[in-house]
Length: 278
Image 1 (tube, rainbow, N blue to C red):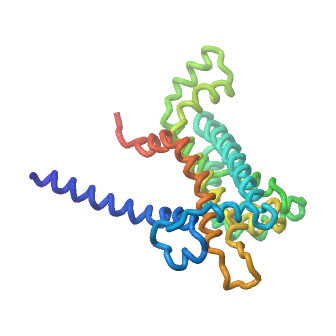
Image 2 (image 1 turned 90 degrees about the vertical axis):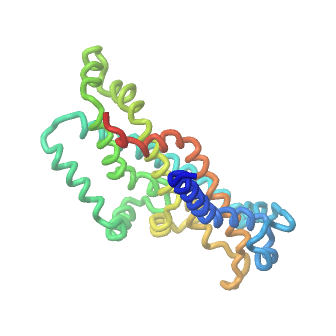
């Protein structure tokens, strides 16, 4: 056995161990969601001795079905937010990348500077602004304030800069309009980057806790991530229903897996972008 094969086997073993360590909490979460509270206390590290779906039913019936309502809220808000954010970012990136206008570089630089400002600093001003606009406790306040995503703009612009301008010039010669060129040429070519950003944007919005917890007080419009930590079936703060919390964590993980499966080809393609220069 040569040295290269030994190194390959060693690296394979290391990667398998890292994968097991990374997946272990997720597997335990899944198994514990099918256990009762008493079994979790006694048998939290093994396969359930008696599989039960009572936790899922209890979670759906919890507080008059508030978990189902907030799950639908999260799904709708995250999907709409992701779609609008990518549309706005791709249009802006197309303008900054393929058009030359006065102040192009200055405006883009100012937008990049905003990425260096922590979001927590702007929360008081944002709260006052939306309070004056009577937008608190609405779905709108969870969607529209963040659609101007500078990170998505930056990533898309960097990719569009690599696209040859001759494609756009050829389209204009053929009589294509600007929006047609954007929709039929630019967007299809940017699918790898858009797919990767779709996953990251959806994931960020789905896991968002600080923003909705600051701007919302009505449970009916809250996302599930704000409601999930408040689960309690008794008046005692020390009686935490871990079986329901683990079941809720399992449920909120499912949409993330589905989104990744939908965009996995584009995401994996985006990983190798720029790796090989011709």
